[in-house]
Figure 1 (cartoon, helix red, strand yellow):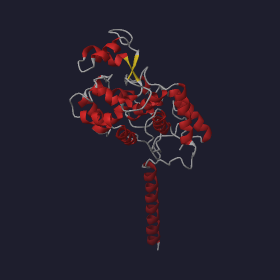
Figure 2: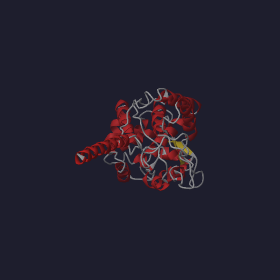
Figure 3: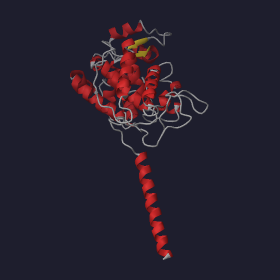
Figure 4: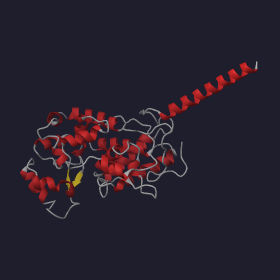
Length: 329
């Protein structure tokens, strides 16, 4: 009798442990979904869009800034909102990385949106998800595609400036280096070419294109001469020029057309059309804006899935600039 009771007790314990393991496993491996906030914060997407639209109405330059924030977040330990964290005694902010310092902008816009969301549904919407949605809304506001954003990311509790310095693509990289850099994030060569099309909006600093305009030969001479007025041989490193020659505040496919004319601003831009394996993709996107828009949305969704924290991993920060002292589950 006692033996039977022990067996029953052991069986119950085993079933309980299996149930706990199942629950924890499901919590740790939640998949992203476009309807993640449908019940917990139904007005979240509208609030983000309203914040993005208001910011862009004041300054079109906010659009490319928000797109770049999401990109620089995802390429460093995944799309976890780590790029938004300020430095603490325990870690150095990714804002201090070479590619980000005195360059990344839009943090105030994210702060404003987060404050609004915390008033609507406290501790629910992650900073990582705000970045992903804000990037999409910024692209759409400037005339680009309105793709579906998958949601359910959680926020990191640390930043990694070393990874930011190592993992972010650089303006000086050649084609093979760019392909490798994107491949290390699980992104294809096609993804690399189409995501580079985000350079159809925004500007770059003189320090990032000075060498190209003075030392390289695969550049339109008239274009190079005009840029030298903005970017002298020495000094003026923070002077800016539009990444796309024609209209840097409209999301279109002129970026690729510029490359065909040898008018890519950055060395890394022109590498996409320089007698290499990606030339045909550049030509295709220069001729077909619908194809570019469709593929851009697909690649943005793919990038937004890089090493996301879901379920019980990470936290939902109440302030995007710092980790919570008391965690929100």
